[in-house]
Amino acid sequence: MPRLRRLTLAEQVAIAFMVGVVYLALIGMVAYSSVNQFAETTTRAERTHVVLRTLDETLAIVTDAETGARGFIITGDTAHLQPYLTARSLADRHVRALDAMLGDQARQRERLARLAPLLATRLALLDESVRRRRVGGPEDALAATRSGRGRSVMDSIRAVIDTMAADESGRLGERSARARESLSRTTFLIALSFFAAVVLGLLAALFVSRDIARRLDAEAEARRAKEAAEASSRAKSEFLAMMSHELRTPLNSVIGFSNVLLKNRSGRLTDRELLYVQRIRAGGRHLLSLINEVLDLSKVEAGRMKLDRAPVMLDSLIEDTIASFEGQLRDRPLTLDAEMPLHLTPIMTDPAKLLQVLTNLIGNAIKFTERGTVRVRVIADAASRRPEVIEVVDTGIGIPLNRQASIFEAFEQGDSSTARRFGGTGLGLAVSKSLCDLMRYDLEVESEPGHGSVFRIVLTSASRNVNDSSFKLHDSVTVSGIT
Image (cartoon, rainbow, N blue to C red; front, side, top):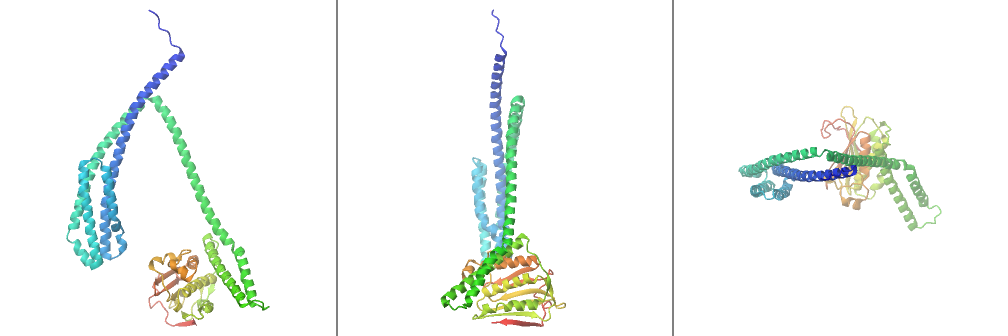
């Protein structure tokens, strides 16, 4: 009998390699099957979680709609109706989502078929209550809710949803058990294939480390981009704040030379040419005022605006401010005056910045008041005669309620037609609000379209009722009337 030839080392390594490959292939196939089963079970469990969450959200939608409708019925405030207004579309969307996720589950689909009309019935009852509140008032709407039908329908909705949730919870337990079983089997197979696990672990570690490195790089890049954006914003504000001299100097030259040309000392300019020069000067002044407003706003944003406090006689400041508008009131059916108590106490403030705020508010009032009255009113403490509130009251076009907060933002006005009709860029009030914040004053507005506006500068931090008769001084006098 011939002796078997002894395998060489190379042949032994090759056979071992082949056996290892076959072994790893078998283990891999079994592990692949187990992993697929685990993944499928996990997917079904996740779908069950989604179904449970969708059921909870469906109930919450109807509950929020009930709460919103109830709030509207009690208070009449339409702001409460937002959840109610969106409830129908959201409920339909959730029902369709449940229909897609339930698949071939006959019992659950049967329950869903009962749930959909219940939801529609409850929303229809809410529609009727809201309609009665709008037409007949709260008592009519509340009478409709006392029938108890809405509560009965809602109880039915909860019962159906609870039944469906209980069914899904039981199914979730079964799927979780299968998932744990698949996980245990997969773990056992991985333990048998130690060397394969080591290789896979090393590969996984390599991929994870690369992914972490990519994430860290992305976070660092996002941080750098954020810092660059913040630096760019600061640079923008600082640049605009520092460009005062460079922007104002050429404009002042244009305005100055326009004034020289308007004198027409040589007598060579015709009336039409003088009119052109006047338009050049008016355009330069308008552009200079816009640049000043942008620069003032940028200085405040960049923190470069400083206060220079000094004692200020408010009555003199207001009289001088009103006098500066005399030229704008010629040939206009408009009266500008001031109502101030006698013997006001000086206040410590920045006179230039308070003057700028008053100029902006009075200028705005004159711009948006075609006829009637613009009045600057000062309210002072009865005992100390210290000014506490300055009001600029006009009989102009007014401001809609939904725009009264946004008018203090840059480049915002009362509505889209305001700029076309009256001009302006919407910077004056933004600058005034920023300056008042800098001086620790409050700038408020009360207005009604067609009945005028009241802009109020609150000079003190004390929250007192300015409409209280004990708070106002009665020995006031109207001064500086300009018609």
